[in-house]
Image (tube, rainbow, N blue to C red; front, side):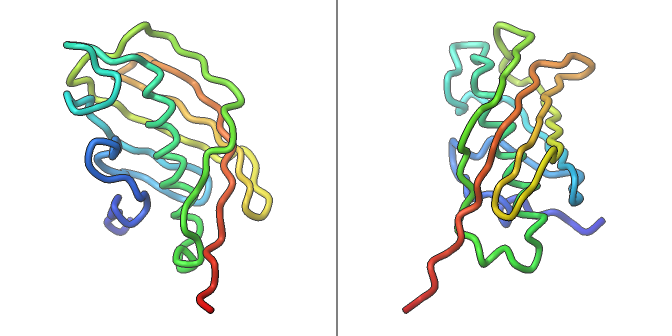
Length: 143
């Protein structure tokens, strides 16, 4: 597989860029790596609220969505999270420095709409399972 440049696949930068690397991407799924850092939102001393994992899954879904567009990526400006169908958390907090592996799988696609399911693992422990809906926005042509 070719090198995956994460900055080409998600617009997030600075504190809101929670994905460090994409390690596997194809038309049906994406796997990303993250490390909980002290700059992450909702971090309280040594742990973080698991609610932030929704954003980790959403960014991984963005990687998958943009990857699927391939050469047509420039035809889109962004993905918009239009809904969280479900979010099941199995922990009360995520420790600072935790190494996370996030896998997102495409469950359904129709034109610019996608339904995806993501899991976040910390080692062998599943932290959450989240189902998202994403709607891709087409760029406005220059006039």
